[in-house]
Image 1 (tube, rainbow, N blue to C red):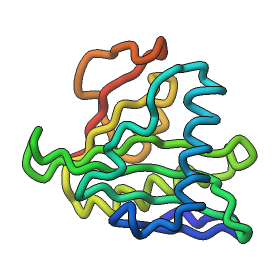
Image 2 (image 1 turned 60 degrees about the vertical axis):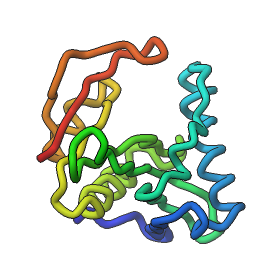
Image 3 (image 1 turned 90 degrees about the vertical axis):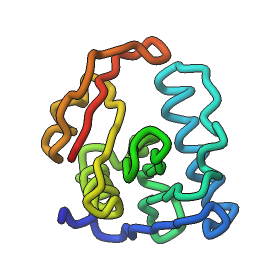
Length: 154
């Protein structure tokens, strides 16, 4: 597994109630800063799925509690028994290119415990996700004006 840069720690919560409110606020803020502002996509990031049973949040924080990166794992059993999806994959600009996202994605894959995993990769990142065992599993599509590629592992 890829090591995190010095000074960063991996955190995991299996219930939203296990995340301190200030930490979840910082996670939500990072998601909005990148997905809504930087990528210029007006959409409701807080879609209610963070509250669902079976949702797992993983994040990397620095010594001051700042969020370097985060992902969300959802249980997609209604679609397929045992299926998980990884989404809301985001890295703070200051931490990009330093291995943080890769280490976090590896931790997310491990948290899925061998179950099949879906994700909707921004298409320019499909090759990056392929390095972690994901393969395209359907036609590309536009989401909020950004090309995406559905990908699956397992």
